[in-house]
Length: 89
Image 1 (cartoon, one colour):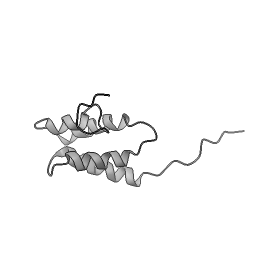
Image 2: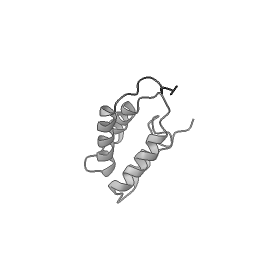
Image 3: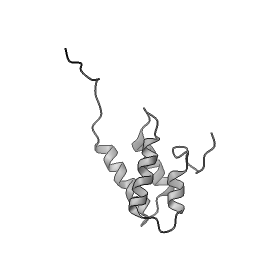
Image 4: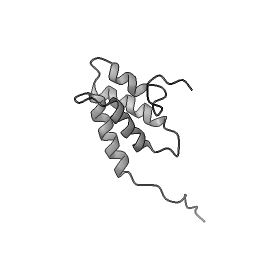
């Protein structure tokens, strides 16, 4: 697979490109982050990926950095799903 950015957990380069867009807003960054998060394959540790992105791309004062930090907090406090759906009988 060809990676647009430098990090394997961002194969489409969404986060990579967000850091390159001059004048990007926090709202734009949230939209990009949401698109990136939807692309994380089932079973992969999204929080670990966000931490990797932060350590690689994070720049103080950039709106994407604050969105990634916020996302990391959400992933860490999100409850883990247990079991399956109970059927009605």
